[in-house]
Image 1 (tube, helix red, strand yellow):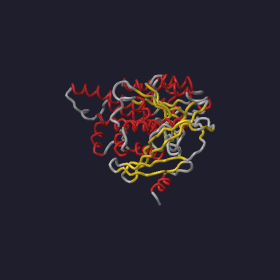
Image 2 (image 1 turned 90 degrees about the horizontal axis):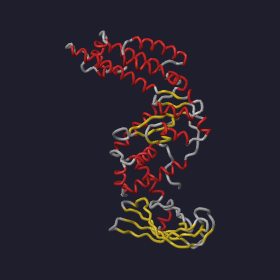
Image 3 (image 1 turned 90 degrees about the vertical axis):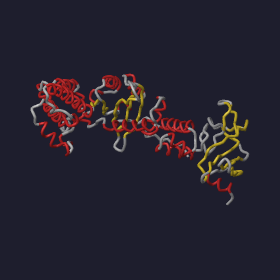
Image 4 (image 1 turned 30 degrees about the vertical axis):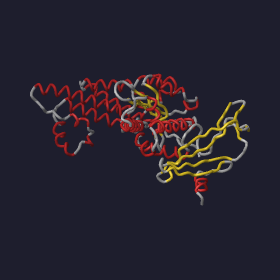
Length: 409
């Protein structure tokens, strides 16, 4: 088989396209494959009306490497003039319009960038940073354009800090049995940040929302109430954040008591911060004896920790009514404790009880989106941070959007 016949089959070319020649350029470490076409009538790429050739443009595309050599496809591409759409370049079968890479090369580049940093991908693929970024942006644009308006019953909303300072993004994720995907990325964490997502949905999609997990951030609550039908019974305040608030309350009690005891020359609570943050079942064996001794002492911190542990049991209730009774007893104990940080959290939970109890109906938490946030943090580390917010959004959708990124074959 001759070399041009080999590349004819490798590229999958059919009439009117055919390989004319294959040239090895050893000095440039390239193989140049020249493709020509037979005389034929061409169609406007936009309206598909038959047109005569108006002009030609010679173009080059990077293809998959042949052994260690770059493979470059070169072809004179005809242009046609359409009365409706003006002058249009004919679409070639091996590449998408306006790109300098073949479809197969872009598929490979997408797979490599999924696994590597963009700088590492550039080194492996032997392309520039701008070329790699262009492939990624086209992939995300392609994937978003292919998305269809489907009902998303279970959603999570959370913010993600971008670098230092009060620089946030609002993230909305869809939770499904097989995976969680990012559906929306908005700037800042204001009500308008989430409004943009709800406004992008159809009436059918809004009505199909069954549960939305979020923390008690007021702008997100207001946005959801304003746009989602029946949102009062669909908002679920995340258990993780509420238990976190209780842990912080325990730590506040410990710090205050430690300062008081130290003033009396008592170091009982010294180096115990982490111990009080453990759940009873999670205390490491090496700390078990020490913790057993200190928690049995008549300390305010011991009482705060016990209240926190009982609050964790609240989430194990199996029905809404049982959870409501459990909370009532816990709340009474927390308020009578005399521990201001604990009382503050108890009152906060009481004021949001309606959307805390929805957990026992929907069984939805922000755990899935917290997992995504960890992956987003991994992207930040891999990229050594982002100076451009739009590129940060692109990377989030590229890696975590569950999009169909590949060029059509």
